[in-house]
Length: 538
Image (cartoon, rainbow, N blue to C red; front, side, top):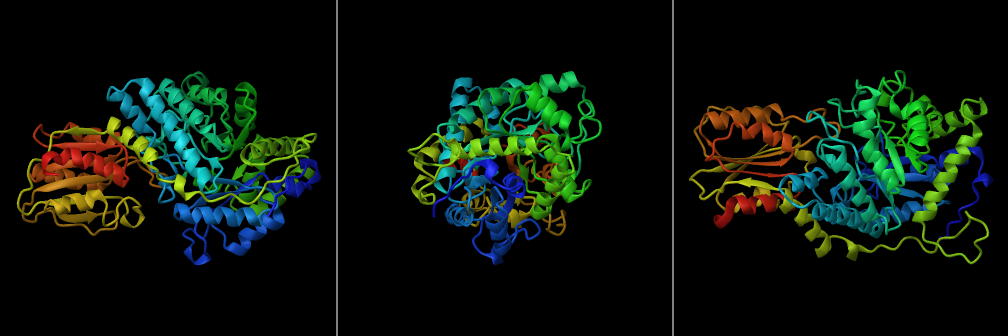
């Protein structure tokens, strides 16, 4: 199938506005596999949105890398105009879609710096992370990398940014995020700096509620803005808004809906002329306080070019159309947004034309070719391992396995653990050494703590995650740690995820108790820590 990208002014107003929408869709191929039915439409509805309404893009979640490749081909074939195919792959394609390289979270690069790695080497790793993410995205049909996060994680209690940030200072975040962008730029994918004007200093998860940032303008501009300015200087393609209320900049509207912030600060003061993208409009910070369709209107009026995951796509198109017809939104503003969208789609669409006298019309050749050989290559895995090895922290070693020893693994929700299969190193390596394996999560009934003493290797998977609502340890994890420590049963500790969680423990651990830490939670991170922690006996 060939696509023809028409001149923007040949589209009707509803068709132009539809191009401003990126809708959520399941990465799985069949309706009965849909994981989030309130967000992910069935095939007939999605096809109607893409084919009949002309929605401009899709954000995907779920499925393996191979499935996503087929899904991207399917969706592009449904659309008359080439689609944005987006994914939140801040930690590489393998973070979301199994089979591809899964990098540790960006804060691991900051961990490399803290461990003494030269900044030039750390920047090389950040660049490799951007390059491999872009290459693997393209290999399966994705063309929009919703990364990097350029928020400065200056609040350890932050439940939504946390290890997703590149660091705790604007200088380090600017350096590493910029090299990530540069790594991706040789490839026809879009990158996006998020979340403007800065989501690092909040203890509230905007997926659940609206955070309020109380700081003055000077602090915000000096601490939060520099990484965005650096990303813009590096020619980042998009900037995503934050669902934050910042009274010093706009006492009435959150950033996503604020003309003062999106147009006044980002577009005018910082001079950004790429795509302004909203964070997901279904998130609680917006959805709980504004009507679905009014939120879409307010976001466009504020200066957004792309409406990410509107709760009601057809309703959003109609509402924005009505707002234009009523004079709430100038038609010229819609046309300017579509012009930016066309420029972005030029970048990510392979095409050949003989007549270049008109800027926007071209045909793409056959649908994107699946190139699974580009996934999970030795070079990509080595780039991942370099970051892990440079940021892991291991103190002491486990030199023997006592009789009746167990490894107790604590996670938030075992049903949601992509990283903890039967053969995951956290389970498999200790079991082979003679440990009994016990797994506890938030759904596990309370376990009596007065059982017979048992030497325990405690493994905790804990990090800030969207929708979790807290960056802190679960009560179960804290209770188990304190019990094992006080009862003398704690043989060793491994923490995967948050360095802030590790800090809580280090002050309480005696020198003879070995511990290991990795920013990553995926199997490669588990293996790298455990092999060092077990040393000769492993």
